[in-house]
Image (spheres, rainbow, N blue to C red):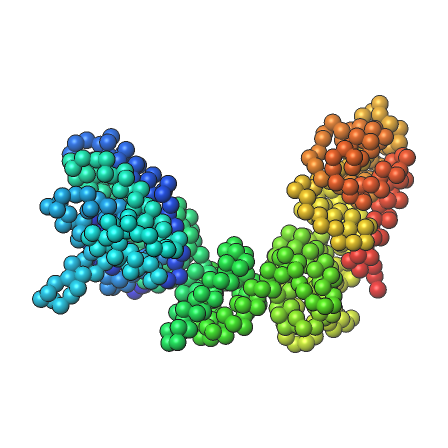
Length: 566
């Protein structure tokens, strides 16, 4: 019989905050982040919706509060994978209502917030919701225990961001609800407990919970694969001597150092380094089933995650530092980051980590890697073939053969076939290759200047010198009367220029002299690209001029990427 992995049921809140569920927000979850605007919107939406319902609450339309994803097996313990923001905010709302209702009407809300203990059964009061460990005592004392709101509103202690949000949202909700009379408060409470529904999605393990989370894309979801991996790895560290707390903080500091988005991308690159294959599943499953960092958590954080985080930042910011070769290394990194994929990153990370103290080796490796990645981009190599190639490079690094170039080829070096394919692409109608034309022309412009220009313009466009459509009574018609010649040359490198502004379709068709003075001239407000400035020195722009320029530019690129046959 197949094991049941998922259940989804709709419940009113009175059946959510009850003895069937003991909600726990794991430490890997993000801090409570709902702000006043969101909390006030929830309350005003509920009040507004209820105002449109019939007098009898049982006849009211249901109000849907979204889905909550839980890890829950046979017991009552339910770990919250998604929905912690809503559960926390709803608990604050119930606490505020409890403080405003008369004593005779508080019992239901008291039971929804705290599971009452029993003297005979030797059980103590237990909160229905356990927040993140860092905030639980604060939440219990000020929100879940009766009377805590009063001390909360008078609180002058220094609070963390999560606790500040709890305080501010409780104050905002109280300010809204205190305006209601007793009958309105009772009616609202009745509706919240009986007429407000959530869908509880339960699954017995983290893998299936994360799969559900990944596809739901619901409002308010902020959990990532790295949050779950943090729990997996740091949870495997002994709590003695505060080691677990130390490494949890270290993990979070690394994430903050490079930013959440970059940190998530880094794990995909670490996965490639460790697995040497295309992803077989989702990130969490790949790490749990194949990489298994929980078996060596401290070593993983100290000797893999920490150096890779620092190196990844250097790669993306081109900020590698060394007494020698730093310029060459950062120049290669600059052009690598202009490639339209990131598949080259794992070999770069891996090699720099291994040979950081040998900058000459790093410079040479990245120079060859940039040539390979650029030619793969020009030749439009598929992702599967790129991954196979970069896996071979990773293996060659381990084998110590990555710099061995022989007749049968080596993964870091371009084959003769790859070189010829690239030359063919570069010598063709490259303007039509929209994915590569800007990169190629910027690289060409840099080589013409013999320096690493910044090229951080907000807008870079490619313009034709000889226009795509020729006016039959223009100078262009005199210079290029043959349609086949025009078709052959119009989209080639030799006829293209760079501008740092939007195109002007009218100016595109100007005669050459006017186009130079009013469109290509840097004095008219666009950045001076060397590639474009060269055109200003030309007196005419005939097919022979275009062919001569094409030959020169192609030769320059062939030299840059070493495409000439050896």
